[in-house]
Length: 600
Image (tube, rainbow, N blue to C red; front, side, top):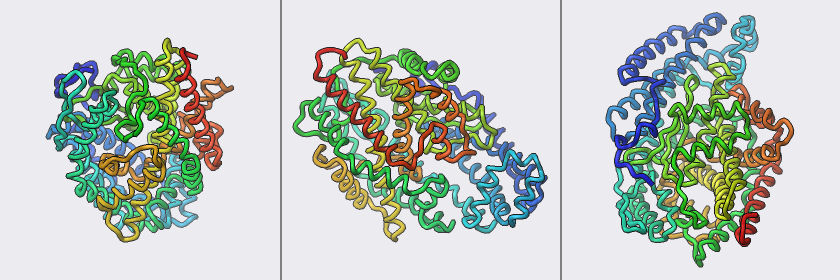
């Protein structure tokens, strides 16, 4: 594993290219100033939107301005994440957030003017045939009639929204660049500095002393700041709760359901199946205990690789493996995937001062950029395949939809990425030359499913309980979160894992809690992705066509409609029960191969 001290040490071929956003800081600043001028033009149309011609003019200006603001924000956000200690990038990010706030304030009159229309006036808009392209957008706004406030109130909300992301930003800065977590000695005696972006790799180390030391040193440091972290989380949640209340929703969760247009019964079914089948999750941990030959399994043991292979992969090998595995999706998909690698859409390497983890960030006019912490492991290849799935998905969405519909709900987006993971895992198993290679694919299918189904449901429930706690007039404190995590782990994992003194700190580094009920989207999507991958591998008639149609769907369709392009009814409990059966079958297959003497 190649180590880099800072970004300057990383070879250019492994760095992200952002030049098609902006070639320089000067161009960024010039575009920023132009965007500010365009935004001011929006306000000049205030009070005129009942005129269909003026409304058309506003919407054209609105969508074009939004795409420019979006590009500025993504460029600044990603640049900052690549070098958290760079004050210039921090300033750019702050400016971009301010511009977003200015944009939101400038358009704050838009939705109130639409919802104020009586039914006759709203229907009369369609006499202007040029507005047809905006019909879904406008109808979506009009249905919000009871949840839209006066112009003044909406403007105040948008102005206050400028600080809304500050809680996550402060938390990220503390975790990723402010703390000193110490170092750990590897098996060869070499010391490596512990950082948030290499912690997962260290917890995969086959040497228990490395895993344990890295885990405890990291958690010992975060324990010192848990009160700060809980306060940041409290005020983020409080803001969401207040906003929902102001907007006349029963709760923040009720607001979420309203916006994604899914009934609560879907999530009741999801949680019900997870609870009914939690023994499958516990069996998974029992398998790990047997593989590691441990009487007691701790949290820091659960990420370790299960077999003895020490194989590392280069970035070039990883790209080739992914392209081969996903060739089953057809030439058009393959062409789009190749663009991800050829055009430097990915920033691979880890170093101190770079944000941890991996993500894909897209705009409506630019292909997404992918930030990674690559450590030459098979799990890192899976992350590339996952994020590349988002990138290719965005390419399809952008080519098939008008500018204002080029977004996807989180309850749809993860299907494309998780399907890639399952296909890659199957491919490596099918082309295995050793039992260890065969097992590694199934291992990661099991890990992917348990994380995104059982793990995400458990943490989604934790998130819901945070909101319920705040909506009941309480404060989110570190002790509240620690106890909540303890109870959740005990309920789901039982005695399959021995909880140590730091297990209750799981919440501290969970950035998803700043994403407004994002975690449940993984559970829905992994259930659908498991089914989809199996159908693709079985070469079900027309499944590639259905999948391509699915990938083309933009934000002018609700998640439930998008699922239906794949022939899936998400309201059926059987969707989730079948997903768990898939998990059980993979678990049993792993056990069978493990006991055999050769590849089956």
